[in-house]
Image 1 (cartoon, rainbow, N blue to C red):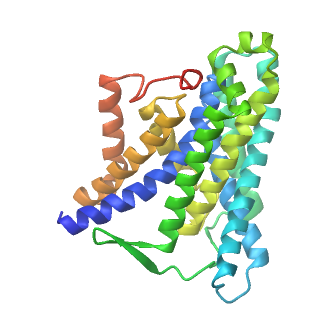
Image 2: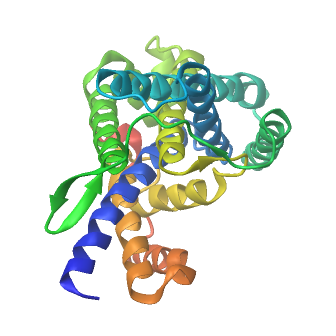
Length: 307
């Protein structure tokens, strides 16, 4: 690998990793509060892609927008993706998980329910939207706009990176600096004591799901803007993002961010060195090696202890 290729793959890895980090936050938020591995979060991500697609298909004219029109359509697509992702996550919590919590179901039942919900949602999407990939309407001319150490970034890559960084910083502020974040951290620390102190557990759990869903849905739109949208598109990014959450320290928001960035860079570097067939091998080898040395992940803290 030449030096110029190294910078190309590094920049691509940071862009991809930022997307993984945003998805991983949804896993780690829910686990931090409920000790639940919400494997249906990958379908929340997928529905976010369809949300942006449907909104833009209805609004964008046949010609490619320019200027402020492009900015407006990007904003609409992201909001639509986040809204549908948040709605799906809210529905999951109310329909699938809340009844189990109220009946004090074993953890294994939660896990089986999450897997079942995942299968149901992606098959529902296949029935509603078709089984073939659908291209995202053109929101702008995706030209190269900036060079970083010789690696040229397109508008879409800058959109993904900038939006992901903004969402991660915003979430970190919400979790660690707001009243809602205090409630989330209190429930993650000790739900019984939090309840005695007047915290509405059901409301906190619901808001946690919605918060993760908003981010996952927006990430789904960003992913679709870079390629296409299809009913199983959440599977591989979802599995990788879950691995990123585990790598950083499951239940730790900043750990999820760090793990996502690291796996994104490792993945693209693996492609650069050994080809696309090895894309996911390098990332999961790194995951196993890190967990052998530090089983709790790189940062290894629960959400309730990060303040």
